[in-house]
Length: 435
Ligand SMILES: Cc1cc2nc3c(=O)[nH]c(=O)nc-3n(C[C@H](O)[C@H](O)[C@H](O)COP(=O)(O)OP(=O)(O)OC[C@H]3O[C@@H](n4cnc5c(N)ncnc54)[C@H](O)[C@@H]3O)c2cc1C
Image (cartoon, rainbow, N blue to C red; front, side):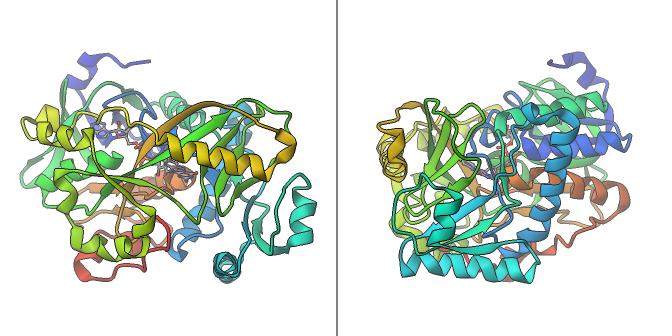
């Protein structure tokens, strides 16, 4: 339900949140449960950008160390969400995630992932080829080993985000859809209101949880967010008779089995193959991104497309600057090659067909971990963006952490690795070998 426009004009809330993706909605949900008045402003509909495009992996394994405690906390909240609102509300399935290795080079990923899991006490094992066959008897291929975490899970991104948004509303939060935020305004030197398409909303605290739109709002406040946009394409098959609950990130294709027998297909880890559309802002923060580009240049496809012209137009007004980018076109060739790899993995599915495909824009940081910060201790402006392809799984925990930070003065987990200043300080985490 779209809240009435006139509500905004007389609003003064405890917390205004920009962005109705999983991060914004989770934050609203946690804050509203603490009896704070909360308004979420979303330029489209809830989950209209990244949070409806994701594959749906909810993994703890194979992460940058800094993210592991957040991923573990998120897993607990995912279980609780499923318990409270029913399995159909999230399609959360704790079926485990498998990362199998075919070659010696692939195996480095398995060994590294296991080492991090061991340090953090995750129940992650290395399966040998017999173990993989036992887990997934239908799988074809010659596997050396595989990283497997039975507690890892997957879910439906759109449904889950809508469920969390509904939970936030039920707890008292207001979510204003089709309401872009043009700017965060200061008074007495502090950010204390957001200017929306329908009027101003004053707030004691403001959260920027607006994904690829965050840099535009943060820049006038003096915060340069080194976030670049890349595109990734996804396919979904027609339904098949369900045969596994395991989600897998393989060398050539990733898949998530849906409850309805459809498989969501993404890029494998060897040829991650994201598309990078050059824009006028591409040079922003380029120096931070050079190491990541150097590690991944083979996997990037550089193009000049509609986003370039959209950004030129965006310079004409504030309203144009915060307008959603045009619907991204999926890279059909990549999606079809993923389908081919999926068919090779499971010959018993024959020539299973694709039902649909889509693309999504990701907010990448140079070190592929997010920015979660209150950049100035004397201001109640919080930033949670740049999730670099990891934010669906982490979203519920980010909401909890931000709600603690806002109400209690500090989060219960150590979020310092995610501070914005790391880019200025030069303490940037090693970029991963795959975007
Ligand atoms: C193809 C693909 C596959 C992925 N797979 C996975 C996966 O398997 N597991 C995983 O954990 N993550 C995955 N991700 C990443 C995950 O989807 C994101 O990290 C996560 O959804 C980010 O949530 P968010 O709320 O920060 O951003 P978003 O969902 O992008 O939400 C931000 C919202 O802010 C709104 N907005 C922007 N600017 C403004 C403004 N000025 N005013 C008002 N509203 C504004 C946007 O419309 C948007 O709805 C994937 C992403 C893609 C694209």
